[in-house]
Length: 110
Length: 114
Image (cartoon, rainbow over all chains, first blue to last red; front, side, top):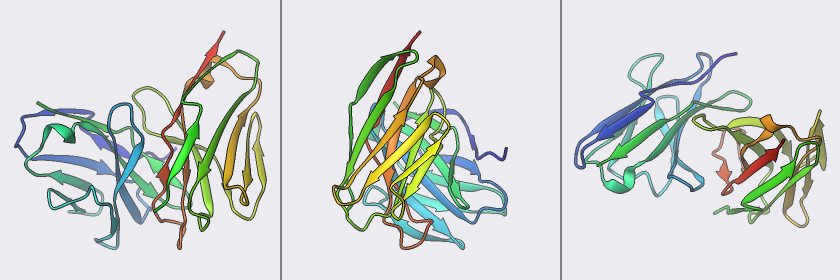
């Protein structure tokens, strides 16, 4: 069964550093998303992406965040100048008839 | 915006018993209601969904009901098995298009005791 692949599975970074979270969506899907889940809390929408541009973003997705589809397969989330409160699980998803989520990247900011 | 509430936050049942998780949503325009199962270390996996033109949907041991008037929807798992133990999330979407974002509830941690 096709999968959404996320790398790395766990990333530890120093506060203030930049991180790039990577996702390979299902190949024939056209709509891509990032969600995050702070430990013990609900899954929150960050951003949706279609046709090489952002379709919608939440108030969480401020100037610290950016997304990019640099080639035909990868979909990345960049977090600049990370803060302690950015520590969370970040899930990528793609859509074709229904959402398929990746297994997530656990980001720990220390 | 949409807000989804979910109860209970934790649920323990004996193997073979039924489990029921209930959700409410705030936006009467919501028209798509998926349920996700999240196992430890994995992303949410869609287990069943229902659209606003349907009141009930069943897939083997899993069923979902929707009451649009009351803005309630529920997940029913019958004949529970230990492998049903996971966190379950309800979600709602007021999709203008089917690919709009979904808003998740806070989750229910289900434990099935052998």
